[in-house]
Amino acid sequence: MPPLSVGYLTGYLFEIGPVITTGGGLGPITHGEIKTWMELIGIEMQPWEVRFLRKLSYDYLEELRLAEQAD
Image (tube, rainbow, N blue to C red; front, side):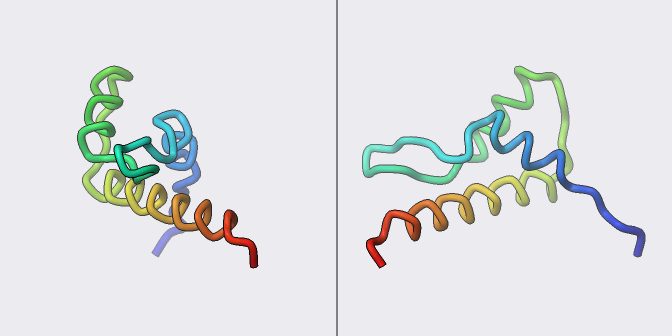
């Protein structure tokens, strides 16, 4: 397999916003937010790229919560 460069997706993540504010606190970005962002920016992504962005958002949120713990 050739090497895969996905660094651009982290840029997309932070352009969209790595997390959202919900009624219950912070949450991962949604498919709807990604779709709206793609439409506004004028790009199309492959389904695996959208899934990867959501995974990055979940991972970012988990690390953010771990960093807030006292221990």
